[in-house]
Image (cartoon, rainbow, N blue to C red; front, side, top):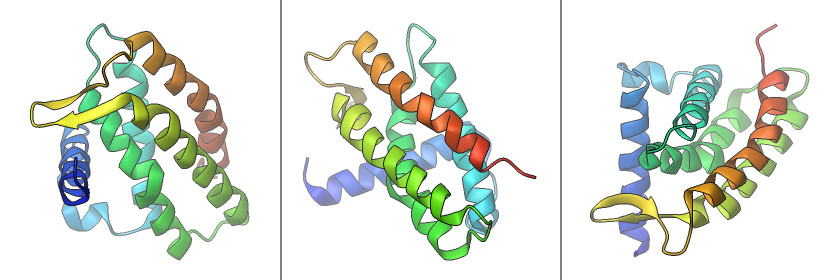
Length: 146
């Protein structure tokens, strides 16, 4: 898939994920790093749940990649002001890199939608997600409202 099509695919999948969790107001969605972080936590929780099913929503997992891979991190770099800022940004960067390297490489966006790459099993995808989810639980604790 060429870069422009991949970018369009990522944007489309992110919009689908936002719709799946009920994000109605585009202005609110980008209003703050805190809101985007809360949205990311909801999307991640939905990804966690969908992987427990026999037919997980793969577009949602694809959308998670764009959020943790870049979008949330870039926003938090501009306006996250908690005392643990450096730790939060470092943890998110680590999670993003791991997700892109381990989960996203198991998914493929085609004209028919998002599917597993040839030779990849659902069990392998779940295992990859679960490994990263351990770190994401730590990230959620770090960013929990006080």
